[in-house]
Length: 227
Image (cartoon, rainbow, N blue to C red):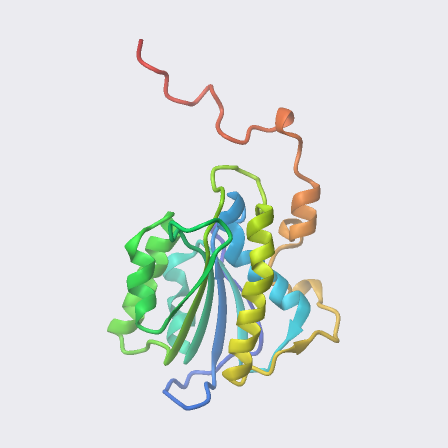
């Protein structure tokens, strides 16, 4: 997403930090860039999770976009952290992979797909150095199919994988004591972690046709081939 402050949904987790059998501050974070097709997987997951479910007061949902180091305070406050992201595993598009706990920072730095992963790897490493690393960390990553489609949305295979990713996330949050339940109260616009104009349905419906909007680059600004 654009470089704006991450939007958060829930009651504050508080200032206390500590390792406990049952997490007292759970942060669910979607990272990525909605404007580059499957790069938006993480943010779309957090958006859909919020629209479908309600949680206990100590669960915080965050659209982290591409904020990088600006997310450090949320990671340090959490004693359970769930991350959604598009990750290049070199596997078939739409394949989900789960990484846990101390393996997450090393894994995200192994094959960087975009600048936001570099930034968030640094966030996790910094949290470890400061001694404020969550006791529980779960990364649910999805292998993208296409990234170089500016203004594009999730490809069908990645959008389908999102459903399974949400199922896994809800189970993990239940195990952590996050009390997920189907939403009974309509989501207020002011509470939504994703801006209305970037919500999935509107984003897809309002995209102009290819002949009216450049999707791969403007030839006026592309480097000329040497003769």
